[in-house]
Image (cartoon, rainbow, N blue to C red; front, top):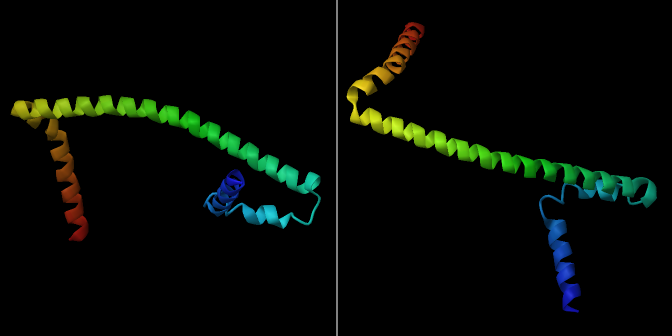
Length: 115
């Protein structure tokens, strides 16, 4: 008996979940038509779409882990570069010179537009 109650609660929670609610109108819209001709293809299409999206998410998840690893290495290298520029002010001046020049050009451009 406990198993039936748990199954019922699980079904109610599944129906009330946000990912099921948008699909219910499509399922109920075909309730008066034959199941084999209308309902089954709809459910098979939904299952296939879910399988494709889940597969893409799994593949994308693996790619995201790899991208995160490379991003971590890039962040460590950038942090090391910032640390070196703090130790050697000449290197800091040389590396920031193009950025300062770009900022000056942007500032001049903005002043000309406002005036």
